[in-house]
Length: 280
Image 1 (cartoon, rainbow, N blue to C red):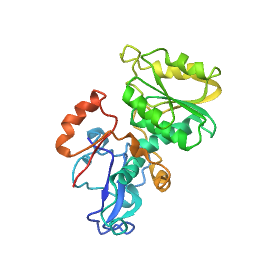
Image 2: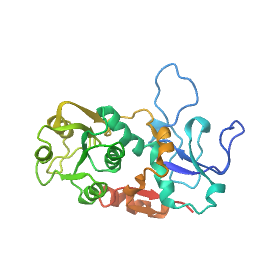
Image 3: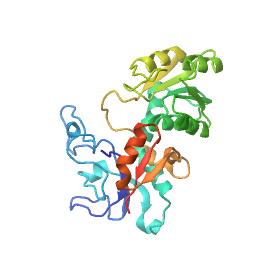
């Protein structure tokens, strides 16, 4: 496992010209082959298993990245400009651009989002929280976040969203009480793991709720986990993070690699929202 990573380049191959030792870079969630393909092929996703290549995961001190100039996302930090003392939260702000921040941002595009829209985000995991945060950054007039984990709903409230706990009552009715004509946009950030009020798997419930809560001529976006997709919009986002966005607010714990088994269990038990493993 481990498909979101960033660090400092320690070595480069002799065919790499645009990157240098000491550069800070983000490793994307889906890596390109470096070759022109005549038909669609699945990208390599570090840590996602043999169906997505054999590059290994990012939960290690060193990661080998093939076709580095195509795959790595440079960030405007270097060991010279930071003197090795940069705050870890600044690094984490960049960490998420290759996957979950880019995915949350893109969910709004799929829904046809425009500034001033009302938005309902289903799911307050890392992607859902960053979809809500993206909506805030892009000028949403009101944002609703639907989940059942109170700590995650509290995080949503901390960025100005209206938390909707679907275990308390029907989330559609809760949202329509605020928006009688429905919201303008809704996004699914859950996918096949959707739960009903009894916390049982119900894979259609989020789609049904989105249809019920989205107003006439509104739009719906879907980025929940149903299948592997292409790379997200992480690279363009990298240039907008500094001084403007701080997605690191979703991190509940920073740990070392020895603590990983414990924190996988905590995440599965909804005791963590986003865990980051750091190395000395």
